[in-house]
Length: 304
Figure 1 (spheres, helix red, strand yellow):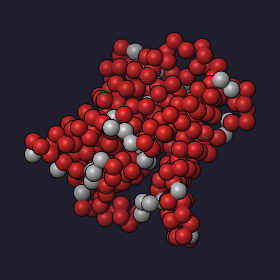
Figure 2: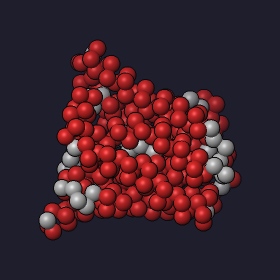
Figure 3: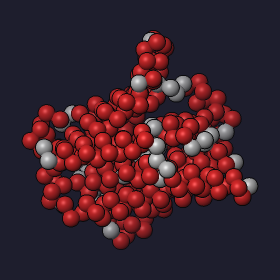
Figure 4: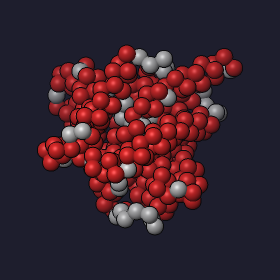
């Protein structure tokens, strides 16, 4: 079942979406907030990730890291993108984005909650973050070139800015201010709830008019986000069947808990209301998918 903290986060962020949608008049003032909040969230997440530990785990589990990173960042978006683009390009674009974006920066927290291989999960978050600026623009160009007008270089620059800048800022801050680092880590949970809420409020306030035009898409977008979460989780499970149970759980988390907030921010700059809606709706299955992940993890233990 979901924890109290997860229920609070879902409730707060969904209420923030509703409030933003009904307050489009503040769009001018909230314009830069999603980008700023994303950078701060990524910064807070990377505070507890040392590059030395990442390098150590990468060496010890290099085969698993390479396999899962390739499967997550290339195999998964190709698998879901090719058939959906052929049938429904409108939804195919956002599925390529959701599948090909890096793993969510909150994955290590869920790794501890679900008793996954935490070091491996941290490495997967960093590895997918590093390669995303290269692989995602290429995938968009390969699969969606006729349906979106996005410069690959521009998209790659944006991804690098939102992912790599917070990573290096966190590494610098951790060395310069150890006490401040400990303080921020201890209060990170509450800060993230506020940042998620502000981000969703600003996104929906900025795009209320576009969302209103496509209001009939809200339910299909929600159902699509739920289906995507299940597909991503199953792919993570299948790709890690040969691995020990804790590493399999880490793979499911890495695949399913994709960085939908980054997709929201990118969609506001490069794509449209459909992509924003699906990515925003993904906030709900992002947390609900912990239930089947926990079930599959326990099932693997009993059958081992």
